Image 1 (tube, rainbow, N blue to C red):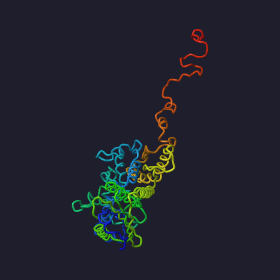
Image 2: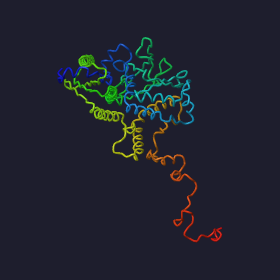
Image 3: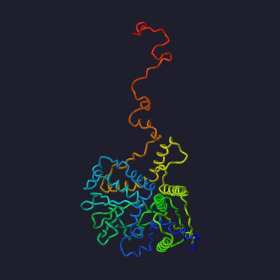
Image 4: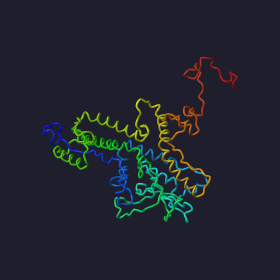
Length: 437
C-alpha cells in the first residue's frame, strides 16, 4: 500500500502504536443457517459467546454512556413496588432467601440497563397449581435453546455459571415460563429480551448503533492521556479504508510499528479501520491541534451516544448550548419525564405484566401492583429551576416568604423623619404626654 513519503530519520523513533479495535463493537448476527450447524443445543450470544461481557465492558468505557446506564437502572427500579394489602406478603418475601420484589427489581434493572434482558426463576408448589417462589437470575448467564416452535417462539433456556468453561460448569436446561405447559421440572425460567426484527434468540440492543462511538470515546481519552504523559510529542491518526480481516489488521499494525516505532516517550498512533475503497490516509496531529481535534471528536461521539439512548444530553450531565442557568431545572425535569415515558416504561411494563400473570395464576382476582414513580421525576407543580432554594421549601410546608423573611418578628416600620439618635424633628414629648400609655 502506498503512503506519503517521509524521511526515515524523522520517522524512526517518532511513534509507538495503539490500535482502536472496533471489532469488539460489532453486533452479533445469528442466521438460521448458522443455528443449524451448531453442535450444542444452545445458541451462542456473539462469536465467542461472551457478548454480555462485551456490553458490560462497554458500560465502563464512556462517561456519557455510563451515565445513561446508571440513570436507566435507577429509573427502572425507581422507588420499588406499590401494591395492595392482599399481595403485600408475597411482594415483601417472594422466596426464602430474604429477597423482596424490590430487591429483585433492582438486580433486574442492572441487567435491563446493560444487556436489555432480565430473567426470573419461577418455582411451583406441590402439584404445580400455584407459584410458590420467584428468584432473580443473572440474565448474562442465560443462553437460548436453538429449538423454536412454529411461530418462532423460544421453548427453553440454558443456564450456566461460566460459559467460558462449560466442561466444569455444565449448562442446565429450563423450560420457558408457561404455567399451562408444565413439564417434568418444578421450575421454569421467565426471560425478557428487547426483541428486534429478525432477532429470534437475543435482544436487539437499542444503543448498539453507538458502540463504535463508545469505543472511539474511550480511545480518544486514552490517546489524549498518553499524549499528556509523553510530553505532547507528535502523534497521528492512520485511517485505513479496507475490508481487512482481523489477521490482516494485526499484520499491518505489526509491520507499520516495526518500521516506525522506537522511543517509549513518543506519541501514539491511532489506527481506525473503515470499509471505504482501499486506501491509507495518515493524518499527523501537531501538539497545537490535539485539543481541537479531541474536543470535536468528543462532541461527535457524545451526540451519537445521547441519540442512541433516546434521551437528551442534560440527563447525562452534558450542558445544553444556548440555555442560561435559570432554565436548567425545567429542561432537566422535562427531559427526565420524556425519557421515563418513552424509554423506561418499556422496561418496567414487561416485569409488571409477568408478575401480574403470576398473581392471576395463583388465583388472586383483585389487587393493585405498580412501580412507584422515581424520586428523580418531579411533579408538574415542581417544574422549577433546580438552582433556586425557594423552590424546595414548599415541599416541607413552608412558604416562599419564610425563606425571604425567616424571622417571625415583624420589622418595625421606620419613620422617614427619624434621626440617627432615635429622635425626630417633632416635639420631644414623653409617652405620658401623648396619651398613648
